[in-house]
Amino acid sequence: MERQRIDKWLWAARFYKTRSLASEDLDLGRVAVNGQAAKPAREVKVGDTVAIRRDATVRTVIVRGLSGLRGPATVAQGLYAETPESIAMRERQAQVRRDAPEPALSIEHGRPTKRERRELDQTRRGWDARWSASLED
Image (cartoon, rainbow, N blue to C red):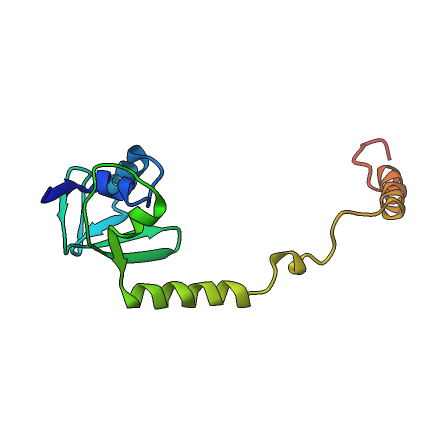
């Protein structure tokens, strides 16, 4: 096997769970082969460079082998080699995520307690008399 469809290769290399998911991302332009956007029927060969964009990360891999079957993860990892630049960028992004503040800490005031809820209800009862929009005044 000298060449293989890119959607089938992405599935066999375990980048996507199904070929239809791989095809969908290919149609949306999230996968590039040798710097050009690829369609699902595009053929790849050993030595091609594939850039896969998922979420905010871009993985750049070099095709090392072809397989028509989806095998175990250890076999799938032998089908490609990730470039050192791609590995370094993913590690930097992971470090930025780890250093970012916890989103829950930005919440200053969460759900009211029972006491706070009663106080809110009492203040709202007084609003009807004070803020009446009736014409009978």
